[in-house]
Amino acid sequence: MNYSKQREKILDILTRNAIHPTADELLSFLQQENSNIGITTLYRNLNQLTDAGIIKKIDGLDPSAHFDHNTFEHYHFICEKCKKVYDVPADIAPGLIKNVQLATGFEIKSHDIVFHGICSECKKRKEKH
Image 1 (cartoon, rainbow, N blue to C red):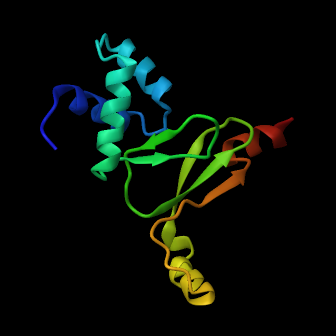
Image 2: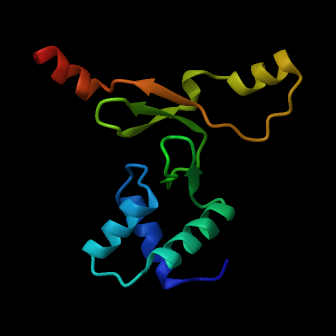
Image 3: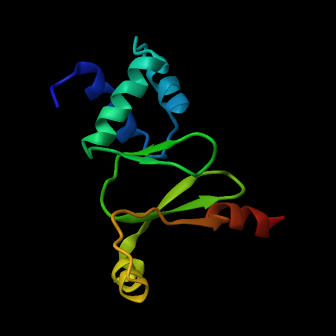
């Protein structure tokens, strides 16, 4: 992948805002920094970064795809109250993928595991009321 100043800026914004933002949220962050990157350029670069394995595109969290600068193996947790997306280390369930393959005979090429519930911050707020 060739160097691109716009791609570098997008990756920088994504890394500094590690909240699993959507493209619309990334565009808002870019606009706050007076960037002239438009939505078409943003989507093109997000797709290129995803295809190159530099970032991860997370589908299925809600109607919009989210983007994650962390490409290491991990799972996600989505809070039903605040809608934040959290990383969950994969080593919580060591051997999960291998065990699924052994039990089913499937050849797993990739996976996305998402937990849904209430995060610790929202849980604390709920307990105070």
